[in-house]
Image 1: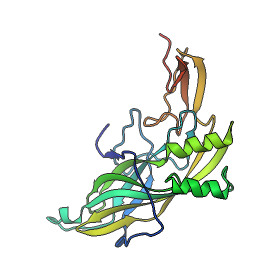
Image 2: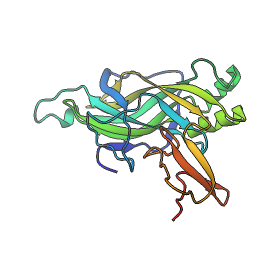
Image 3: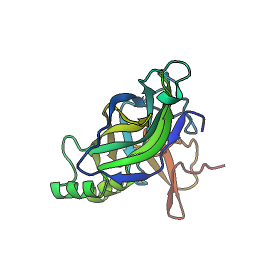
Amino acid sequence: MQRGMIVATLAVTILGGCTADTGEDGAILVLKNVAPATGCVVTAAADELFISHGSLDTALAHGYLFIAQVKSKLTAIAGTEDQHTILISGARIDITFPGGSLFDDTELADLKARGLTHFRQLFSAPLSPNGSITDVGFELIPGGLVAAMAAKAGGPFEAETVATFTMEGHQAGNEVQSQAFSYPVTVGTGRSVINHGACPIEGEVRPGSGCNPTQDGVVDCCTESGVLLCPGTKAQ
């Protein structure tokens, strides 16, 4: 993977009812969800392509990987750049279901208590001042929530989710944050995965997204020893 992108580990903290004083509001500007190139390559460049609405297939119960392009709103004179560098530490995330949900109120409360719709995703990334840009990848929709949605549906379904997050960090001892950024992801069966049956696949094998094959694109899959492979193996 090329420079400029930090991918979060799956460290998740369930959020309580209170929020801490975040100090300088808006020091971090979230710009877009970057569309990675083949091989999950990103460049942290202002002209990177972006995805305006996410799509996630439930076939493998993977979560949705969001690659946030972020920009520093802090300025620094020469020689003071280190003091004005933001050390991003994570994001606070809330997931809602606009237009109706698969779950009733009791089930929604349980999902929240389990840290599947209301949680803090932990990761680390430096962000230099003076308009610097970096790309930070993290799991926006947890795989556990995807699995719960598929289990509740019990068959083919499609549901809209909206994840709203605020990125957090520290700068010279001060807590800073981004603006709230909301992003829609349609979750369902048959969104991306084309299952061709037993491996191998004759002809072209579409790989899906460079970072997560079951999101934001079409992936050709096949089964081998009862296991679904995405992308699948191609016939020689």
